[in-house]
Image: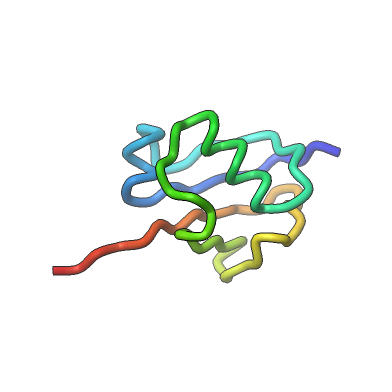
Length: 81
């Protein structure tokens, strides 16, 4: 079953997509599958192990199922200086 999601991008992910967010139709069983499909589409450099994921403003697990209408944020590592 396909669900519609809003996906937020930060830092290098935003740079790779050229946008801060997009609406996607998702057929993945979990958030890992969603990220991998977007990684293939946009050419993200980071593997899933280097990111955090949040759903509707709270950190989530990669094996959580995408839910219709949710806002998903992929959070890449940040460096300080």
